[in-house]
Amino acid sequence: MSVITQPMPGVLEKSSDIPDMAIYRLTVDQYHQIIRAGIIGEDEPVELLKGWLVRKMGKNPPRRVATKLAREALEQILPPGWYVDSQEPVTTEDSEPEPDVSVIKGHTRQYSDRHPGPQEIGMLVEVAESTLVYDRDSKKRAYAEAHIPIYWIVNLIESVVEVYTDPTGPSERPDYRQVKVYAATDEVPVVIDGREVGRIAVRDLLP
Image 1 (cartoon, rainbow, N blue to C red):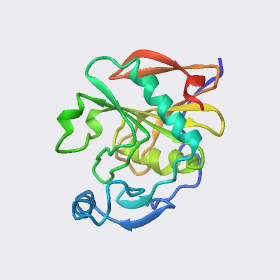
Image 2 (cartoon, one colour):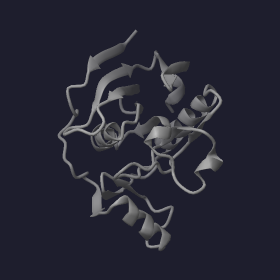
Image 3 (cartoon, rainbow, N blue to C red):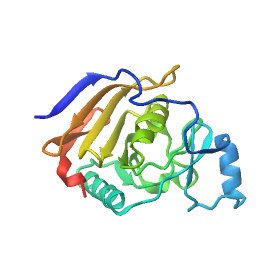
């Protein structure tokens, strides 16, 4: 079984506190204000990461398909009291990313006046092709700092799923202490709230 388990030695590529796609510096409150004012439309290809407004990459067919496959696979095995969302905002202290797939505690209607926060997230998934470096660096550090318990990267370049766990939380260099890499012939365990609720074949997540 081609699964690698190791402590994370730090970011996998050269890192910067400012994402490469950064446009403008904003707080979460300022970001919400300009959305309410109509300066940024809800469908604009931007998100807030670590206080920076950044451009989101376009959705090519493989990424779109893999995102839908991940969402459908997770929906089939989640226990009651959890639901799956796709490319919708999650609010942290200084970020409002829009992960490709989110597993969220509760029900959709309870978030009618706000977006889910880290304490309500079971896991986040990013589907990566052209965004692989960004998802392994800026996104991973932001999720680790917010103490998102589990972060998957569906890596379309290498046809693997990278599973990051044990976040450091706020620190000088936030990161995940553990990573397991699952090959196309493997099954990925889905762990929600500390309990394995099922397994998904990696091949079922690949377009």
